[in-house]
Image 1 (tube, rainbow, N blue to C red):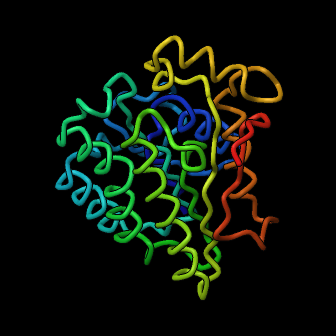
Image 2: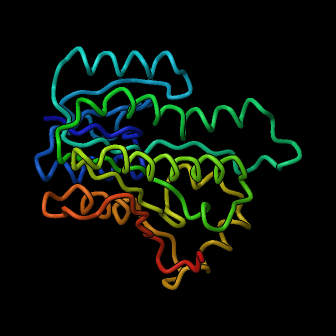
Length: 231
């Protein structure tokens, strides 16, 4: 059985791959970039998640290979933090929703039938769902992803497939590094620990949700944010 990690090349996705590899998952990676640790994968697909045709081709390839799926982790995300709302172009809004939500739907809709009964799905949301964000399309798309995750948990419950969403606070990733300096400094002071999280600290939560002994968690939003006052 395979575990698919979408958005696996860097950041939280790569950290998740490292942890799951130690647990002997057979990992299939999906990203448009080269992976940090290519030896950790049994297969790797180069896919631009903004391109629906490429995403559908990936789903068809997985089906054609015929392997059963143990879990799918959707870590992929895109944001444009430096673009003010009044200047935000529609094409960027569409690109964010394509990567952050639409491709998640295509992949999970297409491959849910291949997931074994009792399997797992984990998506990665954002604390911006609670607070809003200066990157309005990012917060809106992650809110949509959370709603999709919760609805999917209902649909797949009869097959005992657990579907959950990890909600990170500020995490030290290449994507977060695009955030303007004043916003970065402000985020560091918001959590109780006074620092950003690290990708591996998010991957720990994903690992727990995939643990076979975790049998009663579904439709949940798991906050991993260093005590950020999000509510």
